[in-house]
Length: 250
Image 1 (cartoon, rainbow, N blue to C red):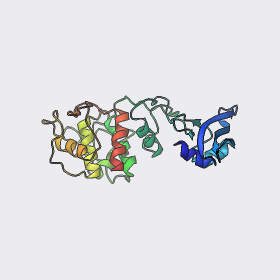
Image 2 (cartoon, rainbow, N blue to C red):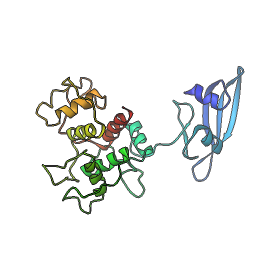
Image 3 (cartoon, rainbow, N blue to C red):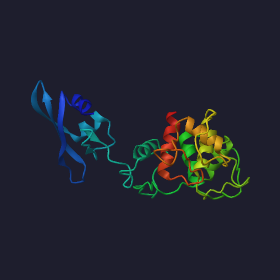
Image 4 (cartoon, rainbow, N blue to C red):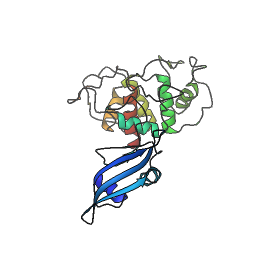
């Protein structure tokens, strides 16, 4: 908030903040804060390096957020602004759960792309910090970039494969129902006595879905009523970030 920023720079109230000098590289050089101190309009000038330290920013390539009133890190990715999942995507990036979708630059996240089962294995393994597996569980992931992640989640019982095994189908998209099962097995969610949704009665994942709703990890797929879950729809990368963040926060 503005009062938090004001206190950090020695002001009582904050009326403005701006980067007044920019280096040729594009990084900030000088930041000016304006506000009241002892009832008098006051200007406080700080170097970008001191602002970085004061506010715990990643670098001096920061911007001033008009609503917040102070310096903030720029978005990690160039394609998530305005997404309802942006904060959760930033969380996933900060936790090392996802580096992005366009290596080696990884400047994009591809929020609307479906998550594959292989990618989901990697996201889960990174979130849970799982060790390497002791064996190779599936016959269709040899040479796959996510093979180690797939074996790791199989070893702890998060997945038993697809189509009855011994396959994992690493390139298939993860459905919302499958995501519910993965998260239920990963976090041991409490059973629910309530049937929350109208469209999952024939799904093999119905109990997983109800557990997910009870835990507050999902609200549904058709706001504002949210009486459907859309269990067969693919999970997007943005939705994945939100599901994982809610699961971790409990």
